[in-house]
Length: 384
Image 1 (cartoon, rainbow, N blue to C red):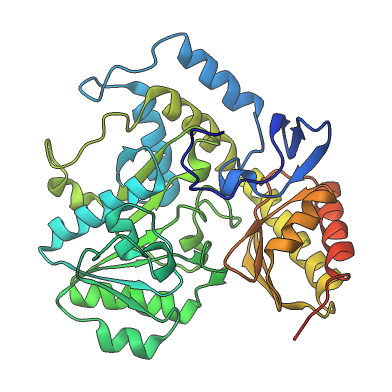
Image 2 (cartoon, rainbow, N blue to C red; image 1 turned 90 degrees about the vertical axis):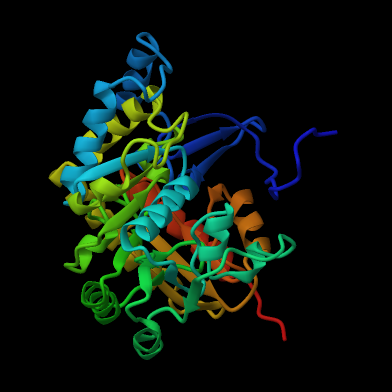
């Protein structure tokens, strides 16, 4: 009997150890991991540089509280600011906490409460995160949600223009909806949203929890579209497995997050920020990003070539090393078959297979994964 609340649908594999793109199970088998811990281990499992940074910090101190200045926090914040083009960082423990910080900051800075988000979006499981999320299934059973969040159809410019007004505090958007099915924002829509925010005195919040830290071939996904958000939120890949999140904002927002306005006991923990600094030093390197973007192109080329004509495959979409295979049938049974074949992948809704390999995945590993997908999917049948 387990003493854990059954909040997760556990798989049949228990990891014994992991390295790079491979998980070694207690069953004696090894599995190609194209989940990266749900977009967390962007450098794969236990990358040497991050492991060394964590061990070095462990020998100094583990926790002293945010009453003390900490050089490792400053280093990580500087890297985030430089890579994003923004100015100030608040460190939290997770993506949900980062989004909470962004929502509070936007409401305080604008003096408004209405925040526009989008259907199929996912922004966390706290009450503000649930309220912001455009998926009813995660809200069921929890009673009334926080008010003043408006959920619009994703990429629907007419609906957006009809809702956007001078009472709007912020627009909160994912460049690629991860949990919602790997839907990519259109260039026209995100540029129009950015302009509307500027014209109406609202803030543009880009949720980069899953797309950030190199996942799409650039430091942050918004950089594919030539826009300038007021706030971005990051987590997942930031610490490569150590718990950390951050809200990053423009300089003019500094005055609204002064002493006592917000806080987090464990936010910016030195172990996590050491991991984050080491992770960003590698991923934000131009050569690394170029190589990762090339791997993303290869992945999509192979997916389209090998899976595009399979009957049960509806569409392949995504950006960088964030891919979704939209199926005509439910994917949970398929995921189980893929695990039996040695490949671990994720769902993104009922009918989408989500691939999130490490950013330093090898060409051979991509080819192997696509081969397993092809062999498995071509044996799927569509039933009425």
